[in-house]
Image (cartoon, rainbow, N blue to C red; front, top):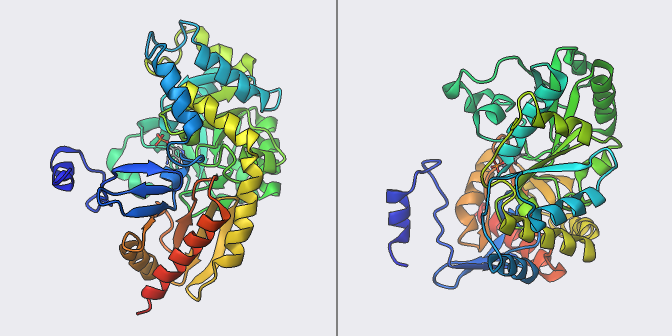
Length: 396
Ligand code: PMP
């Protein structure tokens, strides 16, 4: 495998001038291993994908079994494919009655695109509302509802009629009007540095949407599947969205996205025009089989409660003079450090100390702490110690 980083830089389109560039030989549980066998504790879980850690045996078994039956057969929505049907049924079983149909796609961004289109089609309106420092994906529609101009300017024109409101500001909600098709929001803004919405804000938001007939879309792409201490974070907000958007952990490590709504909303994609959203690989049977196995393990092993327990352990053990605050819920946490420079130093030292770390998009003074939910107490203590040792070295 020698020379792989050089070939990675030569042959792959790059997303930034400073990729992590660590070569992965294998990954298991909470650790990734490089070709020399050095292990790295995963602080980010692939940005909330690997809730069951890497290569969980139940997920691997489900993938292997499905690979022996069939891979892709036909575009989404035509053939009855048991992994899709069984997974949709299991998702719906765990959701309120009003969320009762699943539309599978490939990724988070595509799920956001589908959900925005569905809201426009259902309401017959085109206004979109999003919030400051929101991240919903990188395709044109999803980028249009990003709450940060820096990443948008170069790609304009984007979708028209997008209104960006201040997160957690109830007064701002009066801007949601009779022209608004959809309000899209993350219950906890991940890339803003793990910023939770307040319950009174969500209640006011839901009320305002109902008053004007706008659909409320919850992007639970990072918060879903036990990460925040409940299966979905909306369960902690006292409200139920009209459309729930999922991806990342939805596929148990395989690429999968979904938007979930009530049948009366969802059925509008089937006529005027028919084929309102179509996707070749959406709901790939192998990805659905993997996702179904993952949710079964999350429920059987009560990993929602486990996320809350490990959060307590981290809040107890992770103390350091450079840490000013720990924000978040469950295992979607951010430690605010005493300066942005400290975060940069931490980043530079993290691989050397056996930690896999990456930055928040919109929050430069905090470090992300989002390990797999299957992390043991011993591994969580090891993680806290490694963070503390790395922070210590930033003082030397
Ligand atoms: N919404 C949120 C909250 C996300 O964190 C992400 C991905 N980081 C997306 C949407 C987009 O998902 P994807 O990268 O699968 O398109």
